[in-house]
Image (cartoon, rainbow, N blue to C red):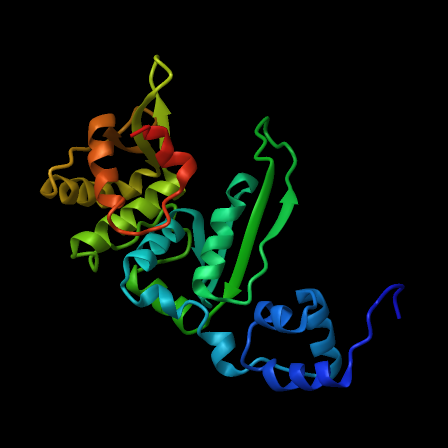
Length: 263
């Protein structure tokens, strides 16, 4: 036994045995006052397994068509990856660890946000990152099907056909911007425009987005730049118009970006 390790009581073992199949390790940690690592270790020693539902319904909430779920789906489409087996992975800069934790809490999954340090490569340093992953072989696959996701979505654009309703579309777009958007400043040092730059294969998707925004009287432009990238841009005034809609949707937009609008 490790030094200072606290022995499990018979009562704790009974509680763990009863509740482990249907509760997340986070929930058990709060009930028993032990770390998630301690819960995992004891469960392995006792041969305990999670039930089918807890292992396969982690991402179900993302398909409820609420504003928050559509926001997180937009965020996942930019900064996440869902494998053909239904495993979701998200990796962000360490400064957004609270945002990633917010997502984990939203889906109520037994997920630990991990951190690691990355080294320089090709003179580019990403720095410390935070990451999460969870596998949901049912609803992860349904999300892939809903957006017509194929592997390497960087080069294979998704479908946003289902986003017919205004709030669903704006919520999704906000998540997309929070993941891939750059809030650029002008020569005065103040916010000037939102820019998303991506592979040219996404041009048609952002054309659709631009047309949808126009129907809500928000102007944007999309083009292929000299380097062959697709660029989607919303200027300051129209970004403010967009943000005024976003504020009414009760979605967890990323403060460090939208606060730059200074409105």
